Image 1 (cartoon, rainbow, N blue to C red):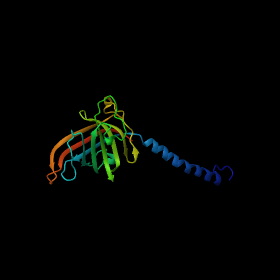
Image 2: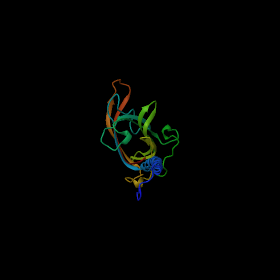
Image 3: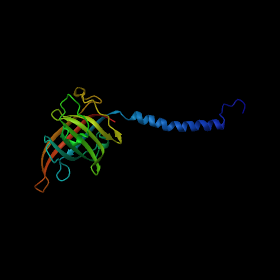
Image 4: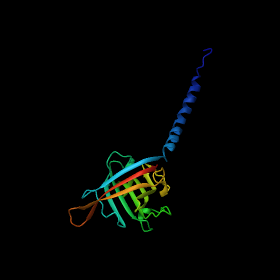
Length: 200
């Protein structure tokens, strides 16, 4: 048609093919942009019930493990409304939790702590490994995985507390002694709260 601005069918097909190829690239670009993003993080872990949710050692012990549950309503991401474990040991080469990672130097971090959402056979679907300053309750993430994304280690800098990519605050409260009913295994009730920024 004379004066028409319509593109020929062949040109339209070429443009459609180019657009189709561009969509996956755009999706990948968005995915890359969406990851490595600082996010407000908050999770409570209730380890205060006999038989299932409790700690096998007191928090001041050199090593131990707690099993607890996380309630709903916080920015807990992969750690929300599920069973979680909290394991720790001294920040020494003998601690298997460290997995070859290094404790941030110069701040007095004295133990490794691992937060894990168990997925069977000693594996974790979501997890955080952190160097912890026990006395100050600071939780410096060195590795982890959330929703399939690798967690970016924070700065370890205690003077940046409360800022993005800074250590989180770990609060631990002792709730008392528990009885497992067998008269042999010690059980301790604790409440943990982890809050701050997490980048993944």
